Amino acid sequence: MMKGAMDDHEQDRGRPDGGSPAGTPVEPSSGRRRALMLGAVGAASVMSIRPALAQTHASVMTCEIPVPDAARRGRYIATDGSTVPSGTTGAFAPPGAPLKGEDVRRATTGGGPLPGVEYERSQAYMNYIRRLQRGTGGFTCFASLQMPRS
Image (tube, rainbow, N blue to C red; front, side, top):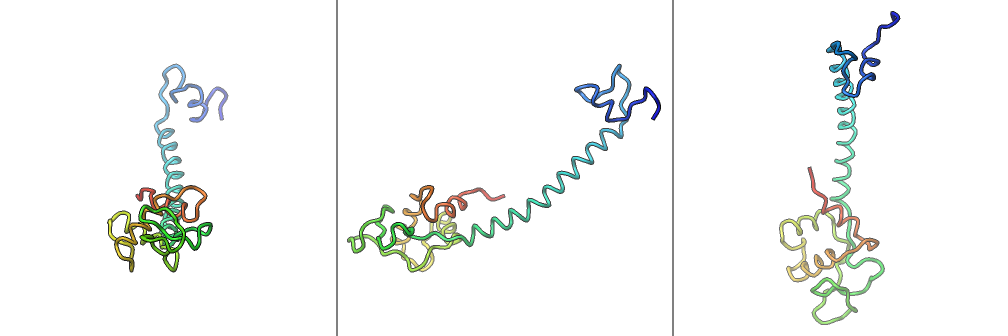
């Protein structure tokens, strides 16, 4: 390189706006080169994020929500979603297995009952799920079902 000559990067570093000192034009290929580099980085990011999002979506649909969670095992579910002692009049026995995330999502968005469960029992289970708090079994699954999908 000749003494006093600056390459594209040195010119760009000389001014905050990326222009050259003293108003001399910057070579047009400098901006294109930078745009191509940014585009390549962006494309690589999209290519690596999309499979991760697809995997996350699949795991959300297969996650499970125990009703009630392990700490409340053996308790019944009242119509308002609270847990009550087993045998309480008007309360429902827990389902035989944890509820699937996909079934809960469908019941939440479509308003219909959970599969294989009558309407009132389904409503009690859904009220229980809506009351879940951080640290409760099934909370992470339910919270992830609430995330918007793109």
